[in-house]
Image 1 (spheres, helix red, strand yellow):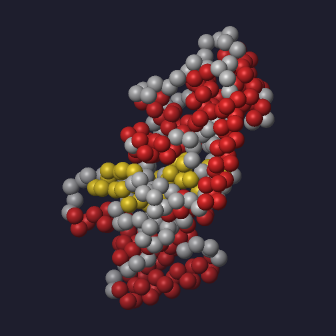
Image 2 (cartoon, helix red, strand yellow):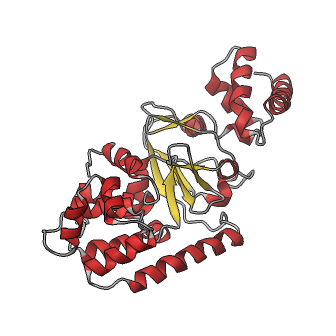
Image 3 (cartoon, rainbow, N blue to C red):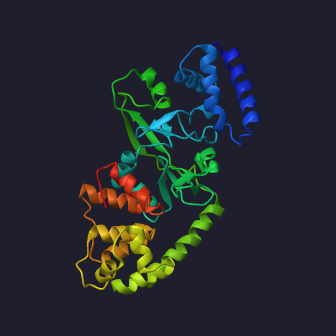
Length: 324
């Protein structure tokens, strides 16, 4: 693919598709650009993508990525904000392993500051996180275009035996293959959300902390407090988590032995942030075992999926054979 004609065609297609689609960000047309270049030059989409990156079109990096066997929507970031061996995009399993094994990442995600959405650890702010028509959390267009501002960075290294000259191609072509990667959290401070978004998060955390301070060791008091906070009744919660409201009430009042699954469903049904769900589980006498694989996944969901609708949480856990 000769440099001069390829670059010229790429710039032409970017300008044309931006104009025709009225897209706000280059990332939203880059896959169309790659498709057209692949046809024009008689190469694969992967080859066209890699050639674009070689010629300095960094917008191509966030295209045609597949993680957890699923397509990841295009994304972009400030030029030179990450190295060639780094990524914002990781699998759910790698995300959980890193959070469990890396104290710095665990601390950063302990209070709900970062959520795991669309295979990214993204800062929990309305500027970066929204919901789709079904209520599932998704990245805003702004977040997808400004990954360096709102998402955590991970280092990639290839554990398969491949030629070192082939490494860059592997990093850019993360489709299903026999190439395996080692993922490690990159604890850098060069990428951080703006002060305004941090201030908004602090205000939300102050509200959470106020609720947490009001919680006593009385399960009934805690439930009444949390239901009132969420403007719900036992009947509303029962309908939401598919449990008899009387069963929930009896459990809270100590008339029925607490059930871990029911306690966890209550946490997800009320969308409780980590600091509050941990207290409620403790008050109900339903502690998660740190070395139980199923409990590890439930804990992961309680930390990075708590704002999601219950059906989305269940769908996430079912990938790892965990039912609640």
